[in-house]
Image (cartoon, rainbow, N blue to C red):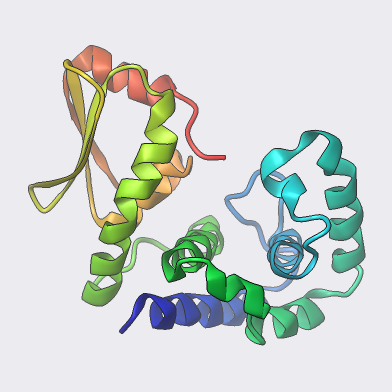
Length: 207
């Protein structure tokens, strides 16, 4: 499957799960339930006047809050219908990996918050997510002062910083969750230099 196919599969899987669990079900996104997450996804793709607030905050925050309130009032079924119909054509300009990362992480935000563990036996998904680790690690590990090796199956996917080094190892999806700030939910192993491990554990990861 291509990156785009896998992103679509994650989108549909997330939609099915949100409807199954209902609007009040929890997510890993602090303070958000399923309805909030669905509103976020619709704002991100369809309310381009408000979407900058997701990343930039600040003066854009009020516009984002208004858009989120308006979308929540539409209800979960309506929001999921919008998400199922796909993103506007402008999103075709983005790498397919950006959508795969977004929908995989949010799919897991719902799965893990509702008692579901890591997925297994998804080799194509693992390979695709492994190709996304470099960009994610380059972005999020920039806040870590010590060295970090990001490792899958004994191979280094990304090397950050100087010695001494911590080693962050796991399946690609678990690494992506950890790097995006979902530390407690991610099934990873930390080894290597103690001080480097502490620096990684204390660093702010994610958006």
